[in-house]
Length: 139
Image 1: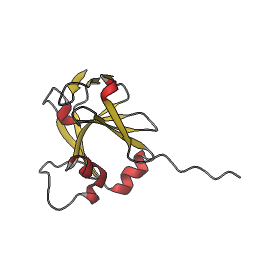
Image 2: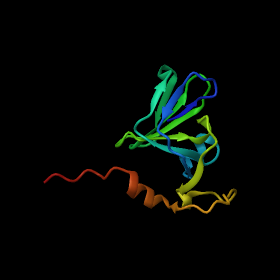
Image 3: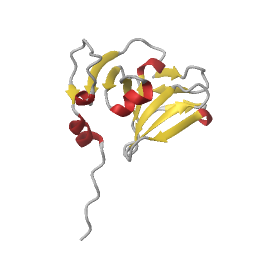
Image 4: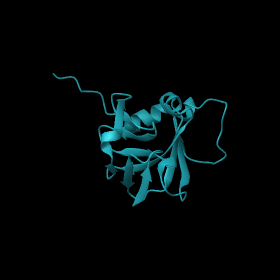
């Protein structure tokens, strides 16, 4: 298991041993953190201490973002249909992580590039993979 915490230490978490970092270049992530979100996909088995300090924001119909209400640290991006967590790489107490993928690559601005050669998904590919299907008409 991997351990992590916010800047002030009010929120601590334990997550499965997952080492792959993914970068998200969507406009929401860039606005949220001032650049791409570099996060570890930790699945659903994440536990938090200090949850009374966690604030959440529904950033879409299918996801929410969380932050520490004391220090403002970004804590997670969570897919609502599955409950899966994506935790910012910098919040973990380890540097033993690997940059493995990028999403919303077609939304990445021209002012930065990563040298790492990773698999990349465009916006439509991400939506097809993660967004819940629209309700089927009754009839």
